[in-house]
Amino acid sequence: MLAALAGGVGAARFLCGLVDVVEPETITAIVNTGDDDEFHGLWVSPDLDSVTYALAGANNLDTGWGLAGETFHAMDALDRYGVPTWFRLGDRDLATHLYRTERRRHGASLSDVTTELAAAWDLGVRVVPMSDDRVATRITVRRPDGSSDELALQEWFVRERAESPVLGVRFAGAEDARPAPGVLEALASAETILICPSNPVISIGPVLAVPGVRAALAARRDRVVAVTPIIGGRPVKGPADRLMGPLGMEVSCVGVAEAYRDVCGTLVIDTADAPDAPRVEALGVRAVVTDTVMLDARIAAALARQTLAAVA
Image (cartoon, rainbow, N blue to C red; front, top):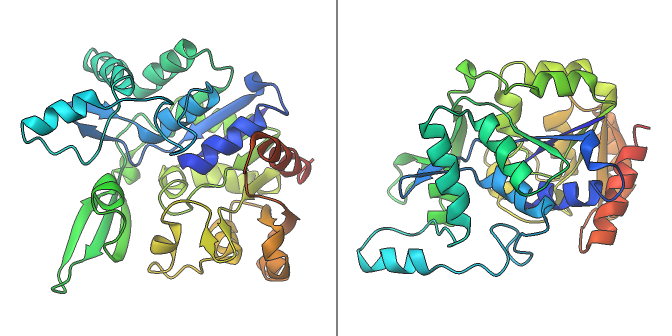
């Protein structure tokens, strides 16, 4: 059995490679919900949906999020009424959010709804949110006049295009949250625990902030292997560099190793960063060097195979 901490496009691609080398039913994907939010009266879980759509083979390969062949007629119609549509939801994607919102309104937990959606998409992988409780990633930014402002994650990432300089990050509600049903059990029983190549601050950070999760990983540290999302001092995709640097983290595979050193015994790094392997290992984290840029399904599967072999 495998458990994987996941969030964002990199995680979705990696999980698609993973299901090509192991039976999907052996995988529990524990997915970040720190960037969940309400838009147009609907509850949206971006990372859960990205993982679900990717595993179903229905995702937009160009953007890494949303559905392939999507249209945006509903958003265009809202524009007519002057409604802010900076967070654009596709027409078919709306069905997912309508279903999730209605089920939650009638008392279903996020875990329940996620299981139902995974079944509807015929996923073999068990997909679970990190928590059924609200944990909200908040980004403090500096304004041009020197003042500061706290934004919801999507406000900073999408509306402001991750351009506002970051001063701090917090996970509101994390201290009172509980892991979703099955999360701690999956971490305790998994033969291998994977940390997907996700943003360490806003994709994996919220998962680790849920009480009990970090301790569960630390207890299994020798069976935990992570894949760095940073290659050559830059993220493969996304704004990790705009978060790590301001928070005092080195924007490199070494910075990722430093962030995970208490919970992760092995880090998979790219061949481009092979010279940094001794620095990673100086932190007490074993470095495994391989190709990590998932340009296609074949490379993603090879990366998954190498990652599993790292702690076999």
